[in-house]
Image 1 (cartoon, rainbow, N blue to C red):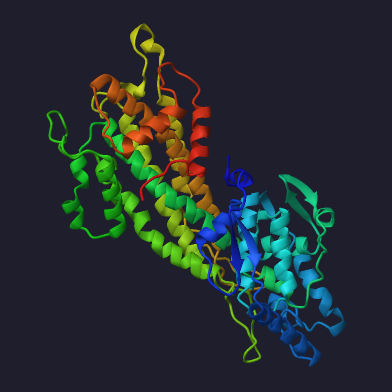
Image 2 (cartoon, rainbow, N blue to C red; image 1 turned 180 degrees about the vertical axis):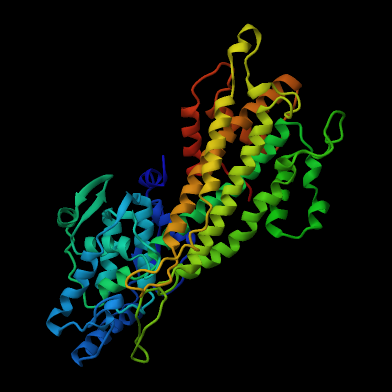
Length: 521
């Protein structure tokens, strides 16, 4: 079950109000996963401010003003003058010729996040759009009519033109939508929902499309998943340490006070809540555990320490007006700029995927230790639970470790930064672009792969802890660690005889993506 499926199980529990106030990552994630409904503010002052922008553009047109993308062509074609009688057709041509997306379609959850992110930007009042356009986006969300948006085709400046053209088209009753998991022609779906297709006002096509909504929406979803993984990988590390009879003193509070990275210190503190600290000196313990255990706070801590920065970058972009040109109603000016450039999101996603992939690598190394009888401090090879005459034909988690290594390698390969691969395009008008949407898609792929490694490690630590308790009279402390083991035991039978583990892994992925376990406060 992926995010799209999770969302279909949820009933909105709250409303997220769209106006000129700031939204959080959690607002977008809740809308994406069906936990919140999007509502446009009915405050008269807010709606009046939105309408003033659209009315100002109308007045400029009546006075024969020159407005980029309204009375001119787009991009490098800004020198082309559009005759007044053709101005109403221009926004429809914009989304029409941008209907060139390819690749897999964004999931329903991702599409909801995209609509919410675009609505947030247009609600800032700098885009010259009508209240009716904003309401039309909320109508699509309310009715569950989600544009079918191909994921590939954006260079991240001028924003997410190609994918957002699919939103613009659906608002006007064209192309296709997701409806209850099925693809339906937009014209049919809107008619059956009682929604009248829009005829876009002069700048509205550009306002919808020329922005960073797709990459920002994906970044919100990525942040939510990465935040949970940092905690879950910490819990897995604690269980791996217990399973291998590790040394809790590696996470000593005074030790970590000497290196004051707050996220790293938090991870060490979480580990101290899970592991007993009064038995580490007993005979037979290795003085220093290998790095994948001993240095786990230093690895997970990189992600924990950078998450506040990622939040700031993502939420600043979410709460920005990021199309071009912007409408300064108070001073009656049209401001031409480049706020569609997604460099901040590109940097955040390139950084996040690097830190997340390092979690996969960390856990892969922990698993390699746990299944190897040379390094796991007395546990059976491959963590096989088989005993007696059938033991020779059982191979335990041997293949699972190979698969985890494959997923890790693919995650690490995907960490190549997208933001440095700018390409000059569109007749060298868009000659420096962000690649922010590619970076965000890469980050989601790294998250997918890392979650698969995490699923493999959940099976592994469940098995390792069970074997430590069975064969070595290990006793789990009465702590969150014991509760986690109990939860895993309820889902995963011990591997006493070789069996297909794919169903267990898929169940673990469901648990991870629905945040089934309450982790550290």
